[in-house]
Amino acid sequence: IVGLNAAIQLKTAYPNARVLLLERAAIPQGASTKSAGFACFGSPRELLDDLQNHKPNEVWELVAQRWEGLQRLREKIGDSNLNYQHRGGHELFKKEDQKSFENCLEKLNIFNRVFQDITGEENVLQVKDEKIAAFGFKGITHLIENSLEGQLHPAKMIHTLQRLAQRVGVEMMYGIEVEHIESGEQHVRLRCKNGWKIKAQKVLATTNGFAKQLFPNIPVTPARNQVLVTAPIAYLPFQG
Image (cartoon, rainbow, N blue to C red; front, side, top):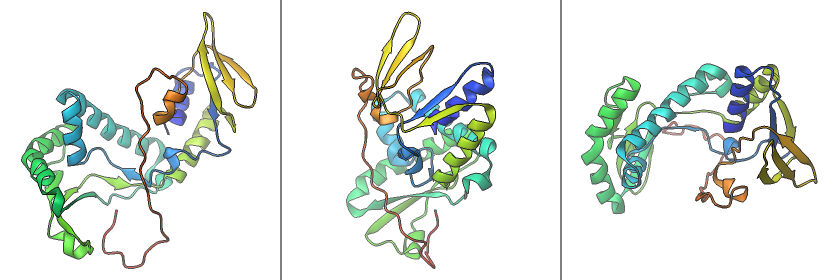
């Protein structure tokens, strides 16, 4: 998603430039197509964790960028091509998460004021414990709802971005895994796993958590998450 959007933006801004996008797999199959389609911009617990490690203005700037990015994505691609659905998001707390829930509750008014400044909407985050029983969740004691979050179809999103990139003249090559990037005086040189060597004026690496493979000194560690996928479940009591 980052690589395709960057390529489209660069080619649009510099139509005479040659923009080449390299994808290491035969088809895009990284986190961009396996994210389960969460159109989210910050759960209360995530925000609390971020505030422990970053300055408040940095955290709120990141939330604003996430929100603006989602709006730009919807405008650029269209909700139908994203299969975007405005379902809201829900953060669940178990009994052993009581202290974490209390910490979130203490900051909820602050979070909502910031969210209102960013989105223009009031009371984005609300405690909705009454939904727990209706949703059928077991072992859950509290639920905080984010009314502005949604869901989208990652593969449809990538497919649409690919078509858009082709339309503006971005060149794309698949099955090309870059192993090494070396900066020279005049050019940046890429060494690829298949023996290819590519020379460019500028290189933008958008490999997310795996950037350290190309830039060993970058303090980035990939995080592992698990997404469970099922066939559509009839009469599911909750959406999103």
